[in-house]
Amino acid sequence: MRSNHAPVLAAWLVDRFCGEPAVAGDLIEEFREGHSSVWFWRQSLIAILACSSARIWDHKWLTIRAVTMGFLFAWIVIRIGMKEIVHPWWDAVAPPAWYPAIALLPWLVNGWLIGRLHRPYSLAMVLAYAVWLVIRSAPPVYDAAVDAFTGVGAGALAFELWSRASSLLIMICGGVLSSTRLVPRRSSHRAWKSHRIPAASAFFGCRR
Image 1: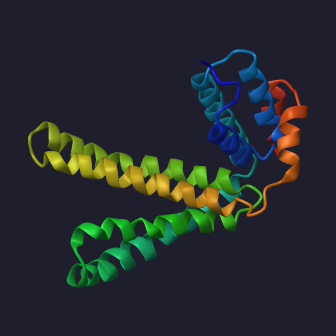
Image 2 (image 1 turned 90 degrees about the horizontal axis):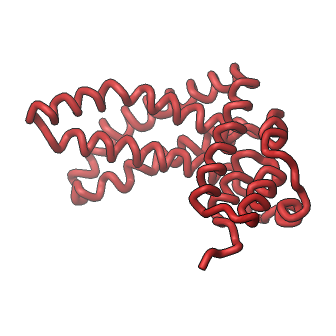
């Protein structure tokens, strides 16, 4: 039996990334007219990308600053601090298999700092840095894939994909955490029920 309740997580993410309750409200109304949960998730991702792209386009210098900040943090704290200082120490005092758990913590902090220092466009700037990470990851992933297909280091490709995907996800979670209020906005739930505007207008409404 189909539920009349839209996926809560998807609606919450739209509210976080777009910052306009009317966008989520429009999607929820469409969902109640008979669309599936898969449709709702697809439209939610489109809304998130549309809102974030508009803000990135409108704030190019802020985007450059966010990407630069993320790169410097990753280079100094993660590449130098974690790999050259923490990693050798950790292997000496704890099982090496546990190291990836703490290695992801700096990525969480990286996303949190980018979001915290780039308000009110926090999550758009975090996504801009995420896109840059994906582009930057292409060469090493490609090299690992070539080695895997030639029979050299088949496990290297799986490790590259897992480590980079997990780092990316944790970094985005840090950005979401930076924009999350401890006390929910009381008006959001009411706005979702009362606002009904065309989707295109909602997307353009994200341009601040």
